[in-house]
Length: 180
Image 1 (spheres, one colour):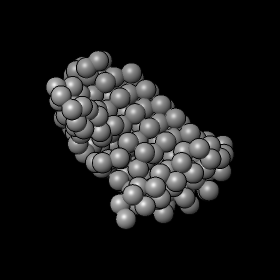
Image 2 (cartoon, rainbow, N blue to C red):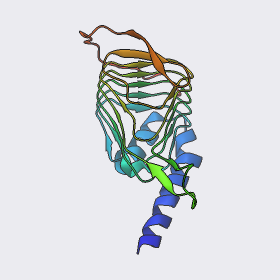
Image 3 (cartoon, helix red, strand yellow):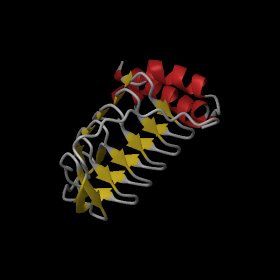
Image 4 (tube, rainbow, N blue to C red):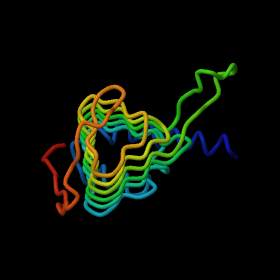
């Protein structure tokens, strides 16, 4: 039974990642993701060529913007987004890897949580088990290896604090570019 579920999940992922995710129709992508993702919050948009390794473990809040070419790895652990989260192009959010100290190359991972109004820049890599706090900003090209406190701005590899963001944010995202 488990093998059949894994096969079925693989087919669903393949269909989205290879065909549907490339379609320039936001409506078709949204319709598919509404049934496949753990949650697709109202007003959230996923642009072209985003890949999901297991959509059932990805939970998007309301009005999220997932830019083109992102990878969301929900293979074994969950990814949970708050509301009004902006994920830059080609970002990777990982939940599973390997323990470099394990003699048997064992898996190691953890849930990833991204708070309300967090802003993840272009080509950021978020590693397994990390939480990014409400209102936090992760600069382009950063590698997030540790939790990011709320309203903190981090950048670099590994990401380190470079500033703070105002705590009275009130915006709501509404970004729906044509043919993306």
